[in-house]
Image (cartoon, rainbow, N blue to C red; front, side):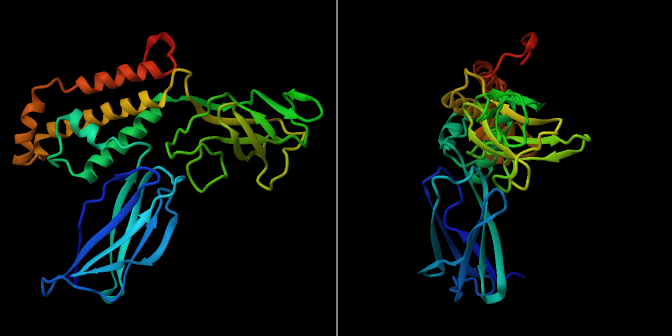
Length: 319
C-alpha cells in the first residue's frame, strides 16, 4: 500500500509558451487519512522528447500538506505532452502526471463547439489528449510529402548556384516553405536536436553505400540547408548524390485557418466520445442528449472544408 495519496489541487491542463504552470498538490497520509507534510517533496519535468528539463527540485510547502512549484514555461519550449514526477524522500514515493503545451489556447472553443461546455463531463486531461491527437492528425494531412528527393540546387562560392557536390560545398536548397511537420514548434534537420526531425537526408558514396547526413535548417521559407557528413565535413566530390525527405506547406496555408481546423476535428472527436454509449456514465448521457441529435459528422465536414482551403490540391480532386 502506498503511504501517501497525492491529490492535485487543480487538474493539469494545457498551456502556451510563456505561461506559468503552477503545480500544486495536497498530500494525504493513507493510514491516518489526514494531510501530511513530508520533509522533502520534489518535482522534476521531462519534455516531449523525454529530456529532463527540470532536475528534481524542492517544492514549496504552503502548510496543511499543500505543496506547490511555479514553473515558467520558456518561450521556445517544444509543443507536446510533458510529464512531471512528484517524489517524497519519506517512504520514497513517486507519482507521474502530465500537461500539454499547444501553439494556441483552444480548450474553451473545443468545449463550446462540441457541446460539452464547461461541465467537465470530459476532463481537462482527456480533452487535451483529444486536442493533441487532432493537432498531430491535421499536421499529417495538411503538409505535402517529399520523399528521398534531390536538392533543387546547391551553393558554391566560386560558381554560384549549381547542381554539383564539389567536396567543399555545404549549402543546399530544397523546396521552399518547409513545414514543421512533427508539430513541435520548430523546424529542424537531422542532428539538430534529440527528436523532432523535420528534414532528413543521406548521401551515397562512389560505391553506392548510403550514409546519414547532418542537416541544419538555415531558412525554412527559402528551403536553405547546411548539410555535412556526421563529422562536420563536406560531402566528398566523388559522391553519387544527396537525397532529402521532408514536408512543405502550401501557399494557401495560414495558421489561423489551421487552428480552426484543429478545433473542429477535436470537437468531432469529442462528439464521437459521447457516442460510445457503452463507455458513458449516466451523467455523460444526460449531457449527451443534445449532442446525439446533431449530425455527428457536422464538425468533421467543417474540418474537411477548411483543410481543402489550406492544402495543395490533390490530383484528380481527391482529398
